[in-house]
Image (cartoon, rainbow, N blue to C red; front, side, top):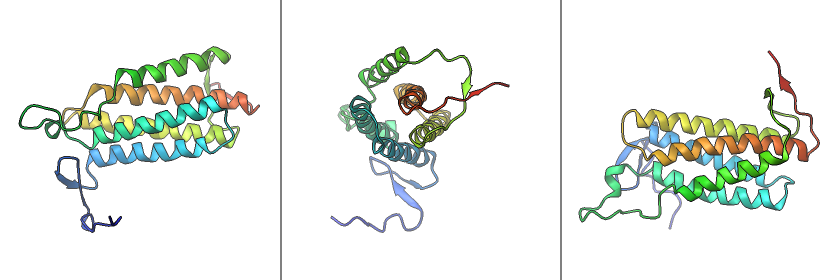
Length: 187
């Protein structure tokens, strides 16, 4: 199989189910942001981090492929003529969301209470985490924009919202793991 198909040479691409859309389509932009987020998670994974965090990031990266697949599949293309779902394994599940919530709760137990916003930075690993969080927020905003025009599974928004929360607490954890200084923003 060749990696290049030449079908996108004029600025169009295909969604799952065959619909052709402009590469500037909000769906493409949203799952492109999810892909960018996944790449930054790979960069975080390549840093010196503990095994549990490494394993958690790998799980999240796998789940982001599900998020991308959901975003690449318009609701009307998920149902076959016989009423069965075409892509049964492409659903953001409650378990995926609960995994993030459990990780957030576990990490927060180890951190000092937060009383102010904190400035991103202090260590390259922490900065990568904040960049990933920002990209996640962008993906979330794009999905909200799509939902103003067409049906999107609510679980996608919940997952992206939880993931940005996870990345925030992970950045704080990595700040302390790397003995960096957490600088509070005090207006």
